[in-house]
Image 1: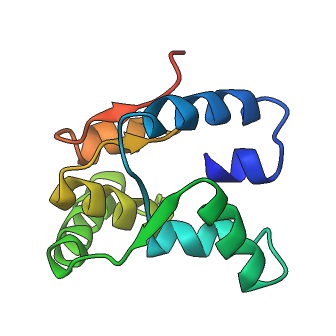
Image 2: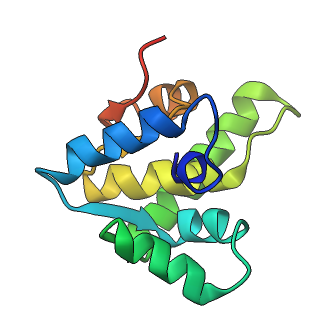
Length: 127
């Protein structure tokens, strides 16, 4: 979702900007260190990433050990349910982090989170 903003995605940048603006009015905005890693790919220097998230007033949170443990358990369940089919492990870190921290998750890809982290409140586009 942040990548939509930073890359000015023609399909999703407006939605992402609007949803961040809406929720920043009444909530603190956080990203995990995993999301930080994902968005950093689009920048040449760490100072650029830092400036971008500072401008949006987003704080970076390290992943608690409880979330790391949950990530392993849920990813194992996923692998057992889907056989050799795989999904990016970072999504499971993100889901476990918001689950353990009792945060809501802004995402465009809600299906995996609904399945493996049903307790997480998802903020997503209506399809």
